Length: 100
Image (tube, rainbow, N blue to C red; front, side, top):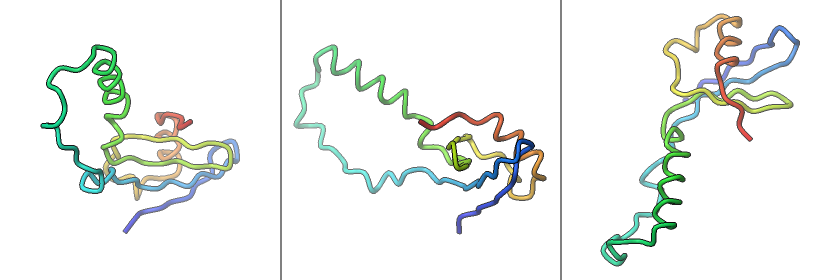
């Protein structure tokens, strides 16, 4: 069951907060690495490493904040967020990062 809450911030913007679970690793296609060369061209290896670093936190459970104008994300999920008062949810919103 996915928990969802709605609150209005101090500026009158209504936000919906939803728990987002990590991607299912089993759903991703596995790759047979034996068919690949052990050494890779430098640029390819560097770009793969950059992608891994950029998406690392996507595997963490997170809170998704959504309004009519923005989407924001906070990871990891703070314990007890489901019962937090609205002003504390707004503090979590302030600590979240913008999703582009």
